[in-house]
Length: 418
Image (cartoon, rainbow, N blue to C red; front, top):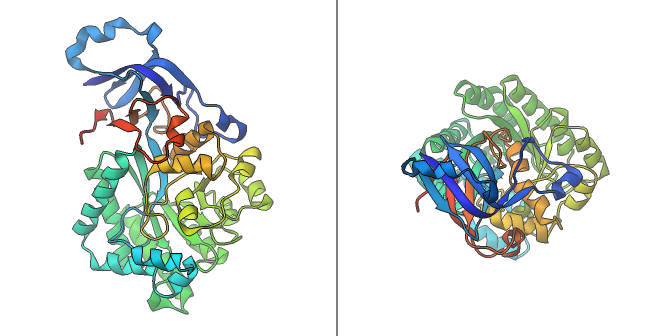
C-alpha cells in the first residue's frame, strides 16, 4: 500500500541531496516546499514536490493508494531523540521534593537516591514489567512526534541487571514501530556495594559487562557518565578503549556538572556524540570543531535541575552542529516530549526555529548513526513523518509550547492508529 499526502501547507526539512548533519550558519537555513505533496511506497519516501506540478496519474489507481488530504496542515520528518533512559521502573517524584528543598543532584546521589534508587527498582522488576512500562512511554512519545529514539541501559549496575535492561530494549524493537537504538551505559554510577572501591567497579564493567554485552550483541554504542562525582577521564578512557575493541562506538555523558574533560576524551575516541555540555568553553568548542562528534544538548535536564544552560549560541556561531534530545529519565528529565525540547531550544537557548528543527531531526539522527535513513524528507529515506493539526506557520511549532500539534503519525510507511 502506498500513501499519498496532498495539499500539504508546508513540507518541512526537505533535502534533494541528503546530508549527514547540518553545522554552524547552515543550521539557520531550512528548506521547505509550500503547497506540496509527498509519496510513500514500501515504507520509504519515494517522491515529493509542489501541487502545481502534481502527477495526476498517481490517483488513477486509487484502490492501491491511500490518499491523505493535508489542507492547512504541515508535514515534518519525525523527531529523532538521541538520548534517553526510557527503560526504568517506577518514578522518583520524592526526589523532586528534595530538589525543591535545595538538595543538589550530587547530594541526592550520595544519600542513595538518584541512579542508585532506579537501580534498586530495576533489580526488583521483571523483564515483562519493564517492557510494559516502556511501551507506554514509547507510545506517548510516538504521538508527540518521535519516530526514532536511543535508549540507554545504566540503571542495572550489575552484570545481570545491565543485561536485563539491554534485553528489554532489544525486545522493544520488535514491539514498537518507533526505531530504537540500544546503548550500553554500565558506567552510569558506582553501586553502593562498591563504595570506596570504584576501581573495582570499573574493572567489572571492563572485564565482565562489556564482553557479555558484545557476545550477545545487545548494544550499538557504549556510554560513560564522565563527570564530576562520577567517572574520571582516566576511567572513561579505559572503558571506551575496551568497548571499541568489542566494536562499540562511544557516546559520552560529559560536562554536565563541571569542566570534566569528558568532551576531550569523547573526541579522542571519535565518540558519535557528547551529551549534556552545560560546561563548554573555548577549549571544548575548539576540540569539537575538528571532530565528527555531535554536540548534544539536553534542555529538559538543565530546566528540571535548575542548571546553567549550555552555550549553544556560541557553539553554533563557532561553526558547530547541535543536536537536542530529551534525556527522558525518572530523575532529571521525566519527559520525552520533543515538541517541548523544540520550544526550549528556542526559548532557553536562543535558537532560531530553523536551527532548532535541524537539532531535533537530522542532527539527532546523526547522533544515533541514523542520518542516512532518518531525520529529513528525502527520497529513499524511511517514511517516518508526522502531519500536524491545522497550524498557522512553521514557527508555531516551537511557539505553542503547551499543546500537542501532531495529528497523524506515519512510521515505516504505516499510518499509526490510536
